Image (cartoon, rainbow, N blue to C red; front, top):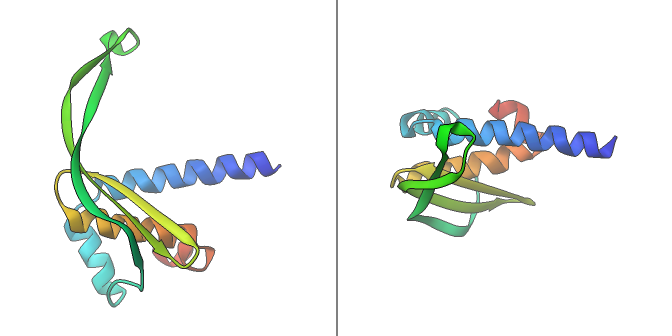
Length: 116
């Protein structure tokens, strides 16, 4: 049973991380404006921009090959006992920060339903 619970939580987190990565800066700004601002948080790794190599497969299932690079911004924060991580396409450091804060909030059962 514990393995199933871990798998379910991992899958759930994977889904919300995908939504946060694809959200717009306006969506994240609006959320925090409605909630009265950012919660107290500690920045573990400030938002920083870099590149990642994008891979593909020939025909979708064949051998891997590099298609090019993409610019991403990542950030890590701590809210209480929860660590929030984010990777977002582009150079928007606020997007990465806000997404990391939301990741940490969503991991906390006390805030999860309020955020969802």
